[in-house]
Length: 357
Image 1 (tube, rainbow, N blue to C red):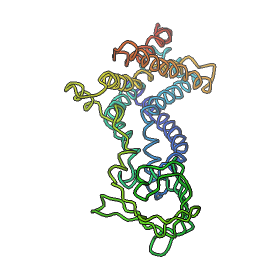
Image 2: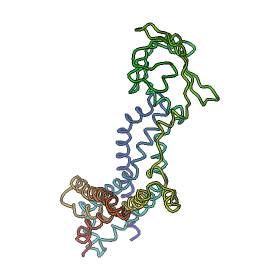
Image 3: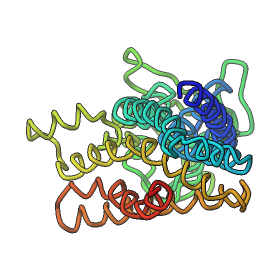
Image 4: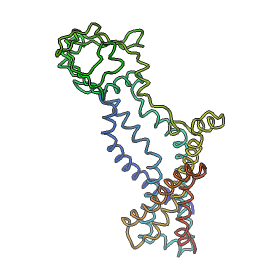
């Protein structure tokens, strides 16, 4: 029996690893454009970090899917090669080869449990905070891109930069005057010109100073008397600050906040903990389901078997979607387990058909 366990365990692990590599590569490539946009204006390393974190956020979905496909490929091949029939003819129960998939599924569930409850919340939180928060918030607030700064209320362009870093020949188009622009005595929309502008941090980096040279209104021929803008960096950063949510906190933090009655959304927190626990059981459930699909696909081929593997995944995610709706409709977080319950009920006839003999 040990030889059978080792034989199929090794094959399931290899097929799962290959499938996971392919799936993660696809997700990583799909995340490149998003990572470049998020890190626009920064270096290649920052863009790579953002891309990796966005791709890592999908690990909890890729691991179970890879295990399901790995089990289906392994036992579909064994079924086509008549290995499972040979085991049955030799008096070996059908459950014996399936236990190899269960071992891998148990290890996958333990790994998913750890990743879901502790690591993914960190990834979900930090994927938006690769750059230092204050400086990054200022740049993102301004949306610096090439030779222009664009906001909903104004557009600032320049022709070039001098050797000392000053922006030269500026054109400021104000669509809607902001309270900050009152420091520049700009109280109406219009076009304003300046010879140059210098940006620096003062007060030990707590304040952003923007000093214009010859800022004036060319249409009315009026020069602005106070061409210096000072803005607190903390107030700018707080506008773009993304507050922590239930998805950004680990499960132990969520439970502690709920028990201490300080979490603003206790229902959502309880639902997240239940949902993470349900997702962590997904590899353990999909392992025997993959065995059954592979076992029954002897005359249908591995391509059909892989296509059929999408059915339990669809049931699982549909049940998860329905459970989320029921949770907030009934105010009961126990529906976070609906995905596991739905998958278990739907796969029971399949399991019974394979293991009834």
